[in-house]
Length: 153
Ligand code: ZN
Image (cartoon, rainbow, N blue to C red; front, side):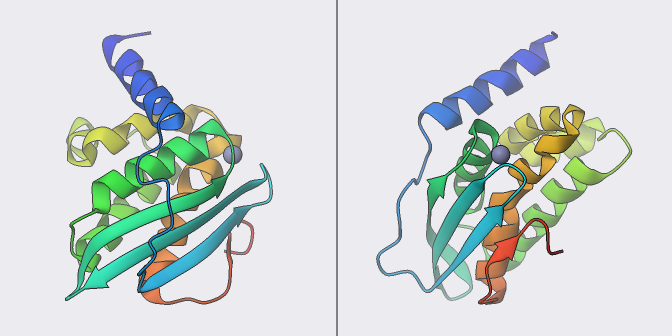
């Protein structure tokens, strides 16, 4: 294991153990439920948006370590960001996880802490655990009302 892998793993473990923003936003302006039936991960993402900016975000639910750590990293990443920029982050992260090509250093640098999820690429069955929270956030931001499932897209 090289230094980066160790760093990445410690970020995932930390976010799984102490998930950030693990709560419902009481005054949320949008929320969405997501499900990954392959693993049994369930997540609810709630956001408070003011003037096109995500002023608060929380998530609740239950699932494996990867799904929880990924959602936690996501909340830290997008809180305080414009909705358009958060949508771009969702695209970046999902592309990084699903592209055949190994992500370049500049892509990983751009992703910051969420680059820690790149290790999941090696475990194909877990990629949907890692993308669940992000797809669910996307649904909330786009105002989709039906539950997001990793198996319906
Ligand atoms: Zn999972």
